Length: 307
Image (cartoon, rainbow, N blue to C red; front, top):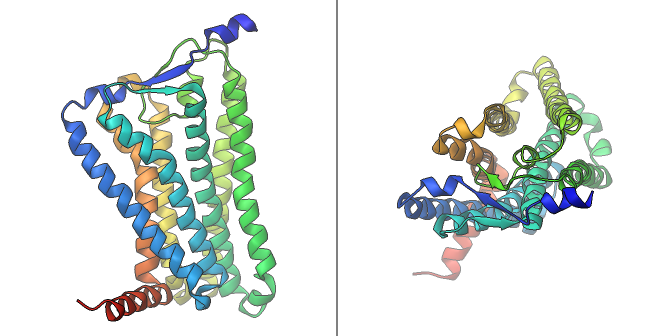
């Protein structure tokens, strides 16, 4: 075992950044602008929900959790990504690589967990309106959020631990951030068992919540077609997330060495950019309660600080 561990490199190298050339300065500017937009937009929603008492309701609390998760995932990715864009060397230590894997993976699964909980909230509100306040109590909301947080923590921690103890015979990652699958492909030993288990759990973790969400909207549609319009923001967000996951799965199906670097960047960034931007825009602009609080705060700031 010691001999196997001795093969494991102490660092990984991202090889995709070597193909950017002078374009990396343009990419850095655009990425920094996107990161600042994500931080600002999601903070506006989080502060609006936290500071406005009228928004202390289950649906808005779940939206706040979704925006907090966007801040969490973006902060776990963009600072390192921006540094790599400007750096001439693109090395990351073995521990930091697994920390990045943990943050990004928990971000992705938590996003799906919260979207599933939000679907249940809309189902109860529309299909069982008389029981809504008795079912969606503060204690229930808190319990659902705790489950949504702990579920990805346990799953990701277990598989990252299994991946971290495997001996590796290489250190080159043809990605823009660390992923569990790209690290497993560098293993010196047979990874069939852990690969099959990981793929099965990944598929189950995606299709079971997706099936539940589709079931809830089918029930809502059967109860009242007009009520489905109130769920339109959630449908847009959930549909966008499914596309993001599909892009991630599509990337893992191909040998990354044979894929164009710009395709790798585009498919990798989709799940880390589009949902964090879409969440505050869709909910902030479409839900009148949140929109009223945001515009009200802007009007108060103009009155308090006239030009």
